[in-house]
Image (cartoon, rainbow, N blue to C red):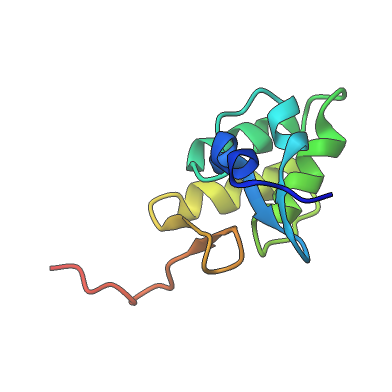
Length: 107
């Protein structure tokens, strides 16, 4: 199946890469607006406690971070400790990354 530019333009905020460029329908199914906003991480972490959506939230947190935690509390702690330094990078693998401590010289 050949995909055209319109396919990607219409869902630009849901593109991710997994051997090819894809639209994240799992993320869309949760009613989230984008895979590029830190609010998405907050929402996914909150959904870890929701029986109906927990499996999808675990999958998406793994997809969009380079982190692996065993509990919602660990995810929440990681987010709270790093939320000022978290950014989304399509160049860095369509993932949320944390700016390393000391990387940006604050004056």
